[in-house]
Image 1: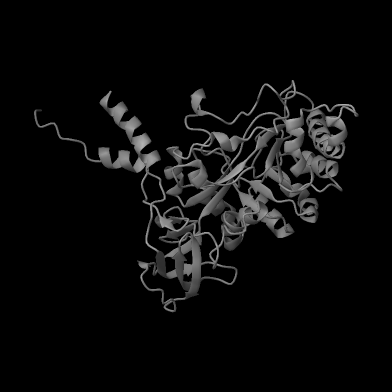
Image 2 (image 1 turned 180 degrees about the horizontal axis):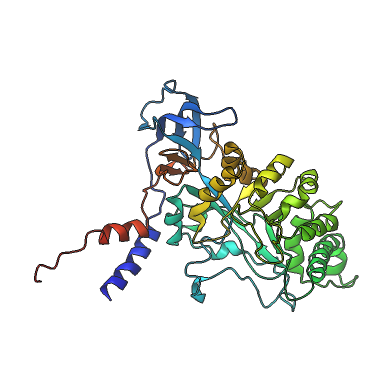
Length: 421
């Protein structure tokens, strides 16, 4: 009982301890190796407030009054981003009161397939015990995604620090999420459901005034869902579609040809088979490089060099663990893509710059003046399993490298000796 009480209190304490406390007015990270397209540079990085203020050749920065960090011999990168998680929405997967991903609501269409108006960000828990665990592996940002239905609802971008939703949530709604592929009913039914929803959203915008005056027929979908889908149909926010089979990706591209939709494919187990079509439309793909070999009828042709082939064709590639509890393993996935032939910098970009660009957070994902100071200092190559995080900053504040797991490790690593025996 005492151990259980300790664990519960520890989880609460660590969750509440993520506040971005006032730190030094600036930080000078001196002599770090900064990877880039042209190779590594040794630089000094000055952080002022929550932003990167300067990136200068090593020894050239002259900021005074700053906390200095000796980064010689270590690698500095932007914080990693997992673009398809359920962080902050799931705590214990098998404990229903801690799972807030299924956004079905009573006022939606009767089938519950269109859930566009329900926003997952209102349920985000910034005190989740999974967040410090994830940060310890260099992940500083995540996109939390709802589940269920054909249109699941909207996701949101969080930076993984701060005790309040207002501290962590950087943009909401960020993207609308849909799911196609294998299901109980026909695949064609799912395609039609999504197509009709998007068409009705545009029709609603054109006829809204007449509809409000009862001068035009009603719509198949509730007004709130149509209003939520309108920015998607107009191309103002991305539509992320979970789909794996090559033929389903082809159907999605054909169905949306000529529209203003900003498509993103999530999963994409067989995306390599239609890489030229994806490249022509500049459709990014979020994938797990460890999904290969037959894993069902939506991944019969999945192969380990999926990311390599997509990147070579010009498709923007991102990596995700598609998990909440295992988001911390993101860099391991990238390392496996490099093993298959993906350029090292492309793998880093897939976890930093690319998701920031795709989802419209241009001030994230890179180390440059004006960028948000989400930074990670590594003991070596971030894609090597033996590499450790030695320093981590979110919004310019250095965070302790602790979590519930490290606290439990420290508590029980030395067991008391029973001297009565």
